[in-house]
Length: 274
Image (tube, rainbow, N blue to C red; front, side, top):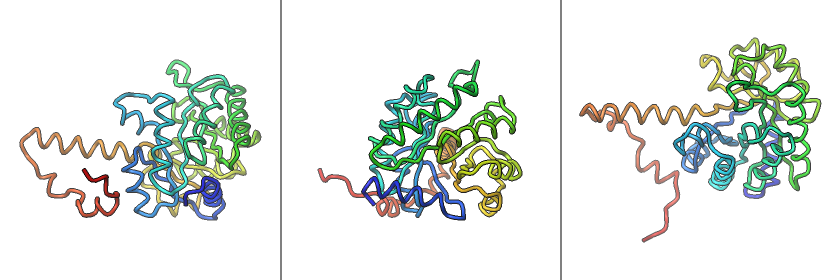
């Protein structure tokens, strides 16, 4: 699947299925190819994964867009972009990231109401809604279909209660968001409350929820899309940290359970010959 329109249609169709689909988050070309090889139907970027890959707390807008390009080109799968807050407070300025992400090859993106300012982590209601409305307008102006996800981040930052989260998601839906997303919904009861309060597909990120919840339980709650955020990149870093700590202590038992080279060669194409 190489045509961007075909990818966009396929991505939208995944949201129309009665059961939830899994949307894993690679952080580079290698992890994207690995996840594609495991049979996932679509991929999503992770801003945390990009930041960690660059050795800092937050990636720049240019780094985010370049990562979108790398992951979109790594496989034939549809890709959704994590654009954080659009790297601007002003609605029109933030919405410019939508066109940049589309040009990089992705077929959907999320915009969030988190400010990036620890002192005031969430945009006030009217500005948050205006920002989503501007992002929707930018998405609709593109030459190909583009799925816009609106995120209400208040639970993650412990600023808003569930009622305020639902109020925001309903307002985001009213201005045209295609998918709704509230990180840190910890229980299936809260997930079900959100799902039944809106009319658009709801994404749940399991990297920030009770890890004991199963896909069947998510389906029963009405969730349509299940992502993992930066969790896979954190798993990889944790594995390296454990192995490196063992190495520093003079032990190498981690080498007994390495990813097989034969499997790596199967997943990744041969490079140019010297």
